Length: 440
Image (cartoon, rainbow, N blue to C red; front, side):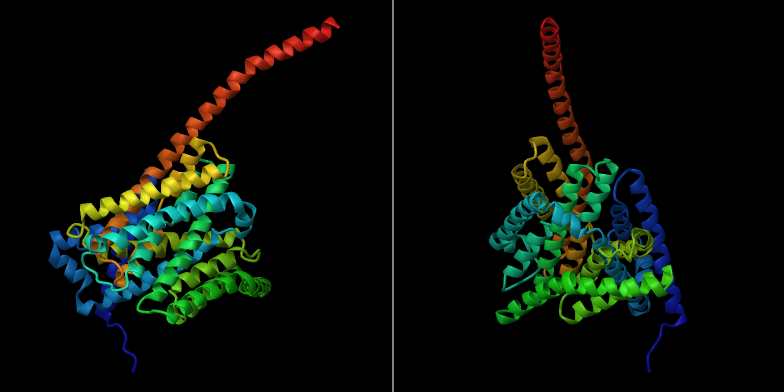
């Protein structure tokens, strides 16, 4: 016989969802008013309601709310939050424009790869050489797993965050904006493939690891080739016979089925959802209008529950380690900026343009937090590392927009000065030409 939630458990579940959603959305909107991503406010809501603040100031209230009745209501909430992150990664896939990647290929790849390789290499080497100092509460005989995770987590650019910054700066459709967005797409894609491989390698060695890598890569290639064609045909049929609501239902069902398949294969379900989002976002039968409907629902209702749940998992006060935070922040910013500047210069950009691109690529976001949460659950990292990743994410988001704007304005001033320097000579040349022709 299947057991169900009692009336008291349902009541507790509804209270948890209501309180968290309201606080997360209010703080998210406040941060948005200050032109910062709402995700920061949503994470802050979890910190305020979690063990960091409420659990310290009013422990009885915290335990009554989240751990009463054997924690069953909170487990139900956590299940809803997991659906939220699956759907969030699904709509994140919509932003990956495969045509744009093909068009901007060389230049974007130069920026993306250099900006990925440098922080990955430095993060990997840091863990490899100083594992005992950084990872105080975890023990791995195979250091390659935490080293690869650390490198990957510090390498990914937040696609959604950089898109928002480019919109705020009104340069999304410009040459630089398009290039940065494409480079972030490549970055994002590489990061998710690498992290899926890391998850697969947990507890596996030798041939099993090779098989895990092969599964991830084969599934990725399948979805982006034959799978994308199959998805397009399914949506074409659905578009003919179903309403708008029916088409959205089909797309979400495909997302969940892809998540089920990847979870069954040993790859995290969120990766399958992300790939399905790429495939569906590339289809003309799921237009931007429908993408926006789904985007609004997920971003404003479901996803905030996941980001708030982050603050409920960890005590950010007792687990704050200044040394760990400083190391993560330094490696993440220094290596990412240096790598992206080199890649930008190689692609033909000026010095100021290169720094603007680099600080844009330095912006982290939900991906790092999702990866950190999964790694924390999988015991790859401990709480101080997770707190360091969250702090790094917030700091890089806060500095990205202002510094991009600063360097772009510097370049504009140089361009204006160059035009001003050339303009008088042009007048002189024109005058001399007219005088000479008149004389002839």
